[in-house]
Length: 236
Image 1 (cartoon, rainbow, N blue to C red):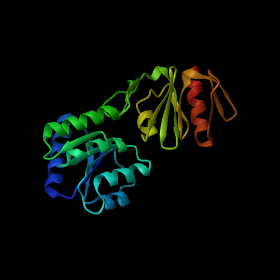
Image 2: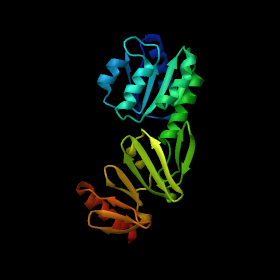
Image 3: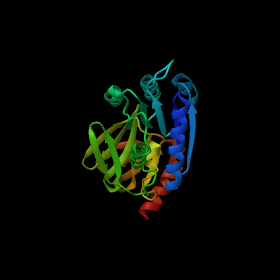
């Protein structure tokens, strides 16, 4: 299920987006939950980072959409932002908050669908476990095969994808989001902040995972039992 927040102070625009969303999800057989908020300040206070996608109108009173997006990113939220506005000149500013799409009013159904499909591909909502990971940003696109991925680690608000060809950094995305599409038989959490590929483990030593390249990763107490059991099943 995808969770979507619509932050928009014009009811007719909210109704239009909800109608587009309903039609698209019905056609694609996608489960969703949508909530609407009339201003950015109230949304920030109530959201608790529970949404996969946030649709933001830039021209709102109290707290405008761009300021709302910046505050949202400051909380560490790594979801997807769609800006909806009649002020096209602000599109470039969307890069500052890693916006996924920018729609100019009046929003059309084809335009909305294109934005949502782009985001769903990014989220791998419709992908199968084991499929390639696509990491897109304003700096470009990285495609990572799970077989080449050593581990993913959280560092502050950043994710580091450590691969056989070198580390790839991505900002403000959820580790849980990527772990969900990795093969369960060969990947596991060694801590709440790190997912490891069993293929690259040299040995386990105390509360450490030692990789074949010498990298040492911590195993936390809460993850240790499950991690060791799954690793032993893998090497058998």
